[in-house]
Image: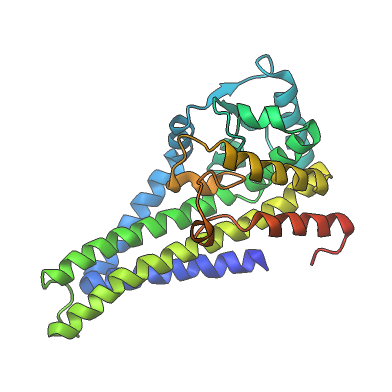
Length: 286
């Protein structure tokens, strides 16, 4: 069901992108929007992993640098049937982890120094299995596409908004104040819709990664226990360099905020994720 939902949501983003391009400049605008999306996706596909790792000051490690952690990732990769990913440590006390890379053959997993300190080996296994599940499901590529589409739609929305205010935009079908109002509504509503769709895609993939990670490590309750600890610790020790553009990558949302921020979070509620993992352990997950 989550996979079907993801396909439908990505299709909605595509349709929204085409509509935005059409509103911007008819057929010419549609072509412009298409090529802009292709260019942004090309850049994200090839360079997003390098950018995010550098953003958080991640340092690549080998078997000799941190034998226990590196060996754990290697063992889990074998259990998942994946090539060995590159392994990185982030010099941050805030406990968190993420996976990146365009495909399983070019993947990387990263963990903060803080997460290695507060979790038991079994809980850490659950977390890294979750990240490897993201790699196996190619979630990074899907999330990057969703984020890129949402960013492109927001950019076109800004262009459309300025065009409407300056009296430009489509003039073949709509005239006068009605056309301006319609363009302004599209410029405001479409980026909001794109953001909500991107969040829905990310939330669906998190549920799949929780389930997949639990099956890889064989300990759903260990991952549930890790999420409980991470929820409390990440609020006490926020990630200093956290950015909204990369928040969806982490196992728990690194951005702090109240109930409104949680409503617009790229992550599903931790309580629901934990409940699903407990149901998986009982054999009652549907």
